[in-house]
Amino acid sequence: MTPARDESMVFSRTAWADFLRSRVGCDPDKYPLLFSHADETDPEKVGWMQGCPPPPGKIIQFADGSFFRFPQSRWSFCHWREFVPTKNVFRGFGPPSNLEQALVAMDDITFTDRLGNTLDWRQSLALNYTDGILILHQGKIVYEKYFGALSREMPHISFSITKSIIGVLATMLIHQGDLDATSLAINYVPELTNTAYEDATVQQILDMTVGVKYSEVYADPQAEIWDYHRAGSPLTGCPGYRGPKNYYEFLRTLKKEGEHGATFAYKTVNAEVLAWILRRVTGDNLADLLSKSIWSKIGAEQDAYFQIDTIGTEQAGGGLCVCLRDLARFGEMMRLNGYYNGQRIIPEEAINHILRGGDKRLFARSDYAITLAGWSYRDMWWISHNEHGAYMARGIHGQNLYIDPKAEMVIARYASHPIATNIANDPITIPAYMAVAKYILSLNI
Image 1 (cartoon, rainbow, N blue to C red):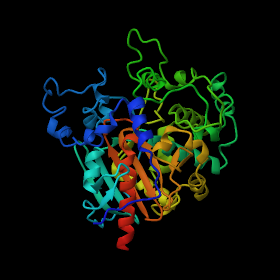
Image 2: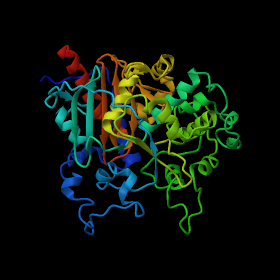
Image 3: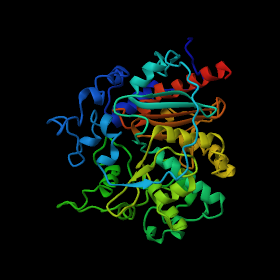
Image 4: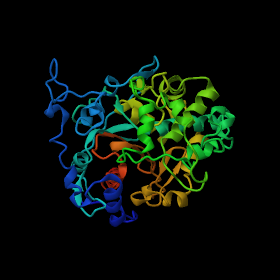
């Protein structure tokens, strides 16, 4: 097949290389060879957690942090609730919605990545440490594969795809008149007085334009992202720990830095504040709200589940685990403008609000513009503004839900990439998805 090239994508190799060196500690000169060992780290071949008991050196635990280290993460991302307390998102009593199969051979589709390498689709999956991937076209499964420790029935940690799902819940409430996007957060959660959020609006929180002192750099052990994770950890009661002991306590420590609305700054804590607002507005916990509003309506195959802190608060910034087919169902509902499984689930106006996108000028000032030039961020979704009108939900280590309206395509992917930030895998991922979309369009199916 002829390599597909998307000439509209602008990519600065120098900026990308500098980012990886300074922010991630990775040598870009070895990319992508540095990440070409998916087969060698296959968790089933390595033998993580196999045996009764597993032998020394093959045990993965929460307490020692090994569950979040690569290559152990290739197993743990598929077994998340074996490490942390969780809360179910009930799928409902009805049958799963039908996903017909119309499989298409795609492994030999070739494309040029944004570093100038010619790759095929099969290679791209290995280079991005794919655990599972499913492609829908017009609601039918045209491609579905699982690797390593993942299988069809297993929920996988979705990380920040969670934010986008929470963003949909919020946007629903706004368009139903139950939540005011222009209102200050403290009007719903007075406990946020004297924090960074006391003069932030709900829409600024949704669009990640809040000025808050908080670093999302996973490569920095001093970054506040780790304080956030410690606050939600089941180990907060251990002797010697003196920090916040749940998400609510942590959020009340955050101080303002800069002005709200001045720039796009992707920070997980915004999703936690948004979730606090949703709980106050609805009187429901997040798991029940998601179940009642969406999960029980899309015909999910499996319950989803949230990671929770020691007082049962769901991690809204990245704690939702979902099986791949159900993630694809959610994506298909989005593609169909909120109508799915024979019913209106999301107001069409809410979907349209997301798809309009955010301020591209603010987005252009962020590091994410290195690999996502011309994109924007709106209601906790990543909007491409490309020729296909594609948009995404994204999570660290390669979790993706990619929706291409023109190609009538949804791609749901789970991965266990060794580098957290998706900037590391975007040079392959984004052109690969466009190549598949154009191939599907060429088939006229």
